[in-house]
Length: 124
Image 1 (cartoon, rainbow, N blue to C red):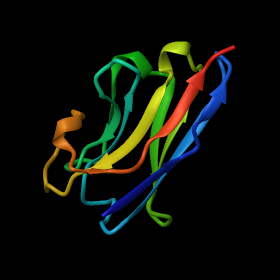
Image 2: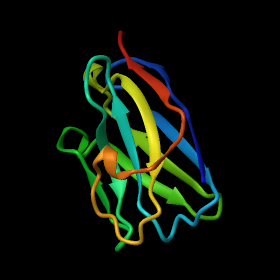
Image 3: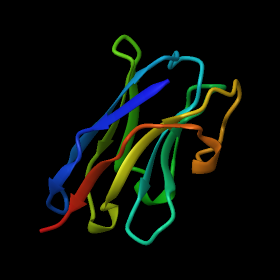
């Protein structure tokens, strides 16, 4: 199982970025997958996760209406479209998955496989 996140960078407040997570070694259809972030001095938090049982995406309240998670199964890639970015979105963003058949949470300690992070900095 491998995941590789990319697409981070420096963006001004109100701007947009799209993160990508290239995956291999498992089938996106069958397992939960999520985006997480960790800001300096803070605990890693779940940002958006697609559940294994129904494929629906859940979002943390702070990004609802601004972030959208999607998948391209033909490319084995997961995306996080981030709009209306705020300075408090600054963090290292990670994608992760777990191979349990049923996983509906977006809690970082429930996910066993992680990609390297990509840094998102929102600043003027």
